[in-house]
Length: 374
Image (cartoon, rainbow, N blue to C red; front, side):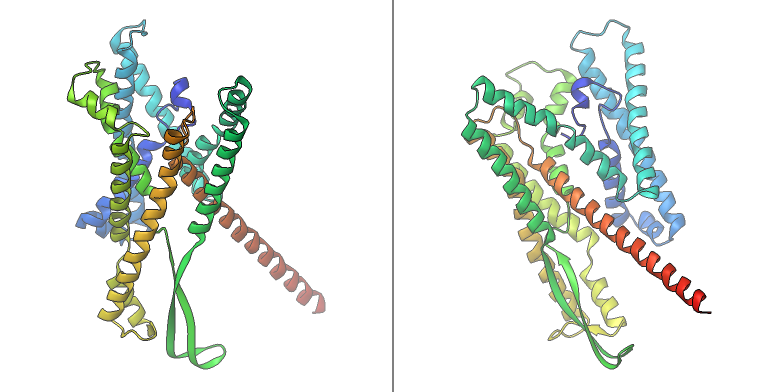
């Protein structure tokens, strides 16, 4: 899903950038729970560099574990012609090196380019599968496996999902903020603004976590090569396949849980209320301090509920399409969500960069005019 088909080709990028994503999420969660890491976040640039260092170490560890699992899966298929020691060492070194190169490349894009490099790499991996998906759809129509009407419905459904994702990701809840008796350029008086809250504050982290947790039993089954159809693990894996009712229920519950969990970790209504109070700002009709904190928490909890339901529906609609309409290939709602959200963020940053460039050019022209007049 996230490797752009490289796992099927077993390239050096087979395990992709997911170890880095998992490590960064674990470190972020730990930095909100552990006091030592929480103190590092407040130390500025030095603390950020140390947290980045821990994230890289975690990436290496997770990549080694995941590459060992992949190597074990391949070796048990009976297709390896070299010794087990040589195969495991070469496979682990190759796969870990591929992941570390992608991590380095993502950091370089973030520092020297536009947008988040890691997100762009994941998006590129997902987008690379679009041409092959279109080719397969056309092939199914030509072979008579799928009717033209069904193919058009699938295309229309994908476009509708993209529209819905763009619509809900752009949705905001604007809370009015007033500043009383402050001096502004226009003179004394009240200054009104607003505080925007996104409907989806957790982003694409909840569906990624949910997919990883639910697919973990099948991953274990593949690693250890269990072929006993009567084993409990084998039966659980069968119930957790895409399109199964148990998978959909657990996926929805896990997404909703992580939406609330992730939002609670990174949003503090009490701290935000204190900052508003210190800056002389208040929400109209709400007393500063504790009442403002409770009001902001109530708003965020409601937004999180609707945001969680929106993410769950977007990710599960392709599952229903695959099951009900008997679509002969898998449609990934999580991949679609990542693709659209990252593309929107990238487009926003491009527009901001263009505005900055235009502003700089205007400043240079105005300075040139002043010099010419002098």
